[in-house]
Image (tube, chains in turn brown, orange):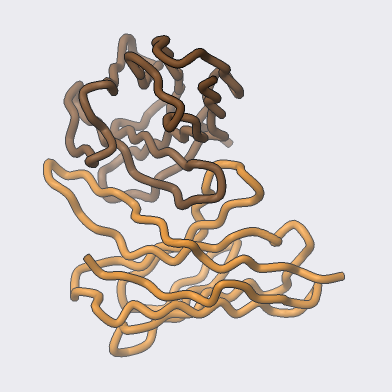
Length: 113
Length: 113
């Protein structure tokens, strides 16, 4: 069964550094999402992406964040200058049609020291 | 946005049916009810969704009341692997044909041997 994959599974970085989290959505999916979950807290929506454009973003998704689909398979989340409070699990999700159920990847645990 | 209310936790004996309730009294006529679960810190896993009719798939059944103000997720024969946090979510449609999932705290289901 096709699945969403994410790399790395765990990323440790120092405050102020840039990080890029990578996702490979299911191959024929067209809509892509990033969510995050701070330890012990709720899963929060960050951004949705379709046709090489951001469809919607939350208040969390400020100028420090950006997303890109650099090629036909990868979908990336970049955090320009990480802060301690960016430490969280980051989940990528994708759907084939916009109204379909979202399939999530296993997540990347980001630890900012 | 339609909000959902779920019990914080529930126990279920292995092999028995697990019935997880959800209240969504402010749901609008065209809003869907989705159920996801999260095992440990893994990515949320889609279970089932519905609008107003009852739905069944290989994982679970979804019973939605006639007034659509509440629903029940039924796992017919719970196993230890069903121990997880279960989220009832009312889908909020965003712009440009996208939607975000707004996760609450969910119900922590513990399946007991």
